[in-house]
Image (cartoon, rainbow, N blue to C red; front, side, top):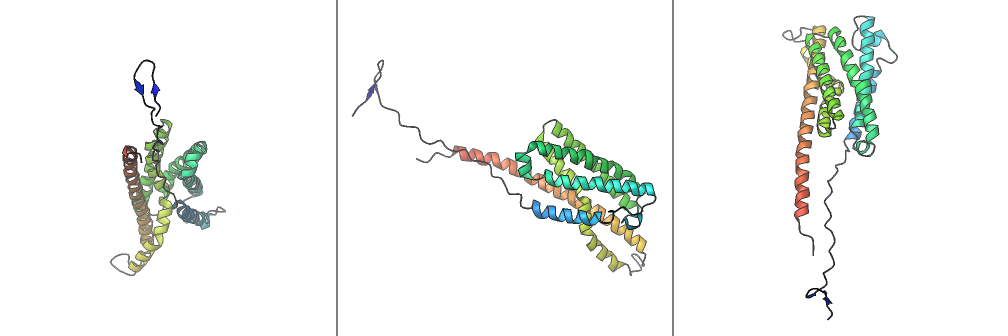
Length: 259
């Protein structure tokens, strides 16, 4: 048996070759499979809503305009909201956000400056002029104010590079962007329930105008509340997942390497 003798010390045995390094566990990326059917539903509902305004015609408007100015504001609100809906879908595509952050930022600026902000500001006079009852007007005003607040918070946190807070605020904001979609999906059920009560002398007594006001306000408030609940649920779920991942990585790092 041979040994290596150090010139200044006792005989030393050769050190064993280092073993393979323990690979660090990579965080699991969940597939955003739900984005495709969600985007398809959003685009179909948006296209159907736009069909009444392309080409622009006062007589085909789903919201009876009080004047030509009201109709012009309504058109501006609808088309800027459409920009917000379509660009907002792209912002939640994980692949684009991870691999093309510059494109993500450009689309985000378009979402804010050409979509949400002008649509929300124009939506305030449109809501005040809407001939669909006070309850519906209040729902639309609350929606516009929350839409502006969450958009400003999301833009501010992005400028300060607080990206975790930015994602949280943009989840809330895009949920508000989709209130119009949710309201239209709820409308057939609300119309069915209202039609069942129209012959009842205690509720509507056949008053179609009162029933239409109730339909408009019910769909607006329900869409707003349900979307905010869904947004907060998603935010809480993301928070729990974020706290579980460091613990999982720590447990993986503490496991002894296989001999």
